[in-house]
Image (cartoon, rainbow, N blue to C red; front, side, top):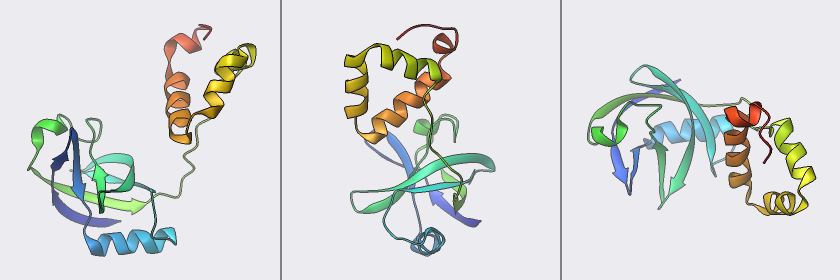
Length: 140
């Protein structure tokens, strides 16, 4: 696992840290490519995280959310201890079976869902899979 210190910065409303070039090179080698996004994991100040390393406005950034670092938006300019490595684990989410059944019963919703960009389908699948209402049998 690669280790570095980085200052927490913000772009828009999103806290992040820049990734040092020497760390990026190792991640690229581990991934076997230099174009992203890259699934990564590690620790922020000793707290474990799973995240995606992305390039935005010409720079590679590790976005830091409140789960990774409590109260992260209020901690801008703080220096963080970051450990990072390329994550080989499978990250795909399967929609909940009740969600699939509801889509099959509503062809309009099914058509809309399958026309969404992949990142939105993944987001919806994750939200709905975790939803207590869906697990309790609520129809969509």
